[in-house]
Amino acid sequence: MSTLPVVLERDGAVPLGVQLSTQIRERILDESLPEGHRLPSSRALAAELGTSRSVVEQAYSQLVAEGWLRGRHGSGTFVASRGLRRAASRRTAEPAAARPLVTLDAGTPFIDPRHAAGWRRAWREVSTATPPRGYDDSRGLPELRRLLAERLARTRGLACEPEQVVVTSGTTDGLRHLLGALPPGAVGVEDPGYRAAVATARQVGREVRDLPAIDPDGWALDGLTAVYVTPAHQHPLGHVMSASQRLHLLDRARASDALVIEDDYDSEFRYDVAPIPALASLAPERVGYLGTAAKSVGPSMRIGWLVAPPEVTDAVNARRTATHDAAPWPVQRAFLTLVRDGYLDRVVRSARRVYAERAQRVTEALRPYATPSTPSPAGMYTTWLLPHADAVRARDAALAAGYQVNLLADYCRSAGLTGLLVGVGGVTDAQLDEALAALVRGLAG
Image 1: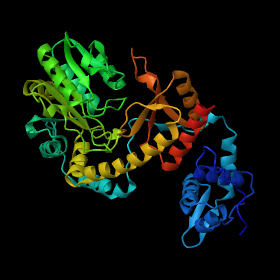
Image 2 (image 1 turned 45 degrees about the horizontal axis):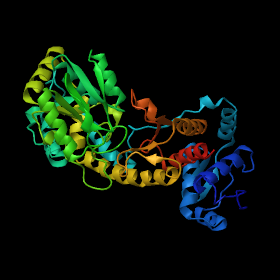
Image 3 (image 1 turned 60 degrees about the horizontal axis):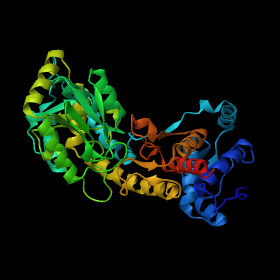
Image 4 (image 1 turned 90 degrees about the vertical axis):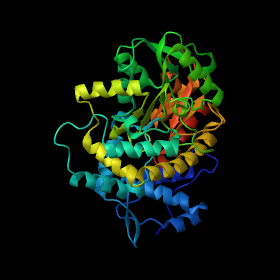
């Protein structure tokens, strides 16, 4: 076996693993590495290049996943078939738009593949369970509501009875039902804030009033029917609403007779301390609480839950019963198993560790060029403040490399904040490194 014709730039902005995988890919395309060629072992190549074995393993794993290499157990790693390489060569000649973008968004979670058995077991139980013969209880499966009530008390400090829990088809579905149960009036929404919440409020005919997210103490709630907030992890800036701000908000909501709608997304993913108790635990009679499985199990599962004051819950249930509006039974039944068997807790714990490590890598890459919006990052993305022109240049550099990164300005309605949101959940480690290298190129250029 000959030594691979690659050269690593140790002082370059691109991580070593990405450099190595890129150069091997190029050598396969120009046929310097022919079909069936056996590559050096990761240990041997690491010694030849003077780098760690993990760098080589990362590059090999990435190329195996892409189909450029194939591994034979006990035999080594080999260049894949010529037919695959020729097809790949034709694809590289097509316009760049043909390559699917990898999105570093704020809402796609990391799911450790080691938990796949628990996911499969949940759906096997669905296949053997007996579905309801008619329309199910619009509030949700009784056993699931019991488990959710127990979990909210354990993890969010929110004491409630199963009868107070309503299973929904996600956060926006719960928001839609809450707003439909309230008297006419405008809704206050943080700016910048959750774009889907704004769209939902407007879709049900509500006027939206912007509330500056950077100054909760200055909010005026007069004339509002409801106030939508993300106190555990403000979306998209990432800060936590302080205790004094929470109490002040509740006092003003009482004075204005407004319902505070708490979207408790991302609350599980704190790196520094234990999750902050839910705002609803301070005033359950004044807060409508929204939870979701989107950030833990996955957005496509479309399941969430709400807990609201009794009069609001009664109105929500009446409307849902009249329209046969309920979360799909198979999804509820699968999620019941995921909660009961501890799958939900396990995926949250493993994702929290991954997010903490990846957020640190993002910080190391971007801190020379931008300012983090909060000193204590949490959740599945980090937000960076920098001039709009710089943010656009970095975004465009990432796009050229095949990665979609969101601009902070896209979350603003009247606020003039600019910067980037960099998600860390829906990508591999190698993809994150490649995207960060592209962002750095754009910012440094």
